[in-house]
Image (cartoon, rainbow, N blue to C red; front, side):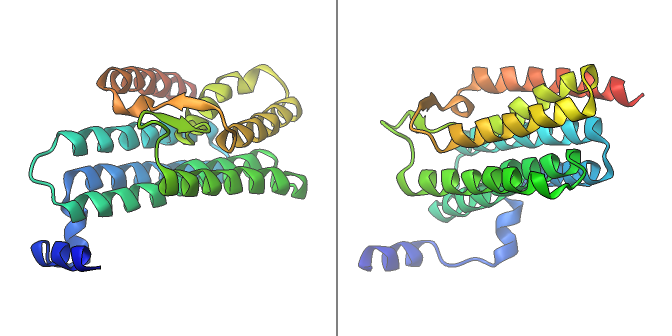
Length: 218
């Protein structure tokens, strides 16, 4: 308690909106905006546009951490606030959005509700576990990090026009449940977002996916 009081004295409480001007947090909020765009187009049934929003949300999510680690002069409260903001945005981007995607593609049939709930619940459990215990051995995740859900689903939708809607809805349902199971499994996966080379690879993937889905929109 005494240590926390001393930290608060060194870093007096700032107004809430001041944290929105922190560059990594601006990046996080940009990702949230991309997620909102994705949800908007999912509800409209424009899945190509939605996929672009989903993959850009991941790109901004990865970028905010890279920027935060390289910035100088950020206070402890900046880091704590940014971490909390990131987790809250993650549940929307990688939990709520894929659940809505499954429901929308299933034409909001009640049969898709259990799958959507399991995807959302697994995402919430996965994030809560990470917030509590962090990385295993300081370098690996326990369970599949949920940003991989969007990366995988965006790739899966490249095949959406190759089979019937009914068949693809089953594929999407199975993929969603499989990802949910991996999210809460005990498998160890590396922290991909922490390495600049992986950010470059994701940027390349994001641009390629955006071009493909953009072409589909023409």
